[in-house]
Image (cartoon, rainbow, N blue to C red):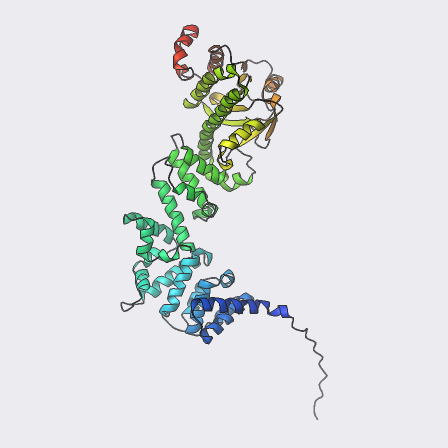
Length: 497
C-alpha cells in the first residue's frame, strides 16, 4: 500500500538583485584585471572569477579547496598581485602555500613569478610574523629547485640573492647590501632586480630603512635632503621593530646623535614636525603617540634644546617690540638683556622654559616660521608684554618679559597661576608679572626667596639677579652675562665674582 506523505509547503524568499552584487562585482574586477594582464583564456578567467567570488562571499578557508589545477594556482597568484579586494580577505599562510603545491610540485615559473611579485608588492600587508617567515622560506625553496637550466633572468637573479631578498628583515638586508658593496640605494635595487617595484610595499620599507641608515651616518646636524623625506606621514607612520613606528626610530636617532651638543635647527625642525613639542599635557595625542615611547632622557634633552629655541624666539619678539614701538630706551636695554639671558643658556643654567605670547607676538612668529616648526607656547591676554619662564638649576625660577616688564627670580614657584601646567594655555598678563609676585608672597610670605627688579640702571639690575642666584648657590661666570665692553666697569663697581 503506497505511503501517503503530507504536502510540504516550502516558501523560499525571492532572490533579490542585490544578493548577486558581490559576485557581479567580483566578475567585473576579474575581467578588468585579466584584460589588463593579457590573460584572456576562458579557463583562466573562470578560475579567477570562482576564487574571487568565494573569497568575497566570506567562504573562510573553504576557497582553498578550489585550487586543484595549475590554472587555479596561476589564478590565485595572479589575484594576489592584482586584486585589492581579494587581498583584503585572503591571507598568505602555511595552508595557502601548501595548497599551491597540490596540483604541481614545483610550481610553474609563471605562477612562481607572480607569487614573487605579490611578495614585493604587498609584503607584510598580506602576511605577518610567522606567516611572513613561512612565505619567505617557501619562495627560497622554490627558487632553489629551479636548477641551472632556467632562462628567466629575473628568477635567476632572485635565486642568487634569495637570502637577502626573501627574508622577514629583507628591507634591512637590501640596505646593508648597498652599503657593503659601496653603491647607492637605486643601484642596489637594479643589481637585485627590484627596481621595477618602486611603488610596492617591500621597496617602500627598503627606502625607509635606507633613510634610517642615512640618518645614522650623515654628519651630525647636517641639513641633508633626506630630512624632507623622513617627516612625511607615510614614512613616520610606517611600522618598525618592537611595536614602534618608523617615526620613533627617526626621532631617537636625531636626539641620540645630537646628545652633548646643541641640536641643529634642521634636526630640531624635523623632530617638531614629526612629534611636536614634548612640553604639552601628557594626555595629549601627540605626547601619547610619540614622546611617551621615546623615554624621559630623550625628552629632557629635547626640552633643553627647545629652551634655547624659546629664548631665541623671545629675543626676536623683544627686539621687534622695541622697533615697533620706536622705543629708544627699550632698544638700548635689548643688548644687555640678550647677553644676560644667552649667558645663562650657554652656561647650562637653564633646564626648561615656556613661552607666553601676546597675539601680536604670535602673529610675528607665524609670519617668520612654519607652524609645525614652532614650539609649544601659551597666549597672554590683557597686556602688551610677552613673557618667558626659565627653570634654572638649584630649583630656581626666572620670569622675564618684553616692554617694561620687571625681571623676577624665585627659589620656589607658586601654585598659581600654573606657569608649568601645560593644560592651561591662556594666561592673564597681570598674573605673569605683578600678580605672580603676589601669589608668591601669599603662599610663601616674605621668606627672602623672591627678587624683583626693573632693567635699569644698566649693570645694577644684572648684579641684583646675579647676587640673588648666588644666594641659592647658583654661581655663574659673570663675564658671560655682561658684554665684554662693560665687564671692566662691572668689576670696578661690584667687584669680581
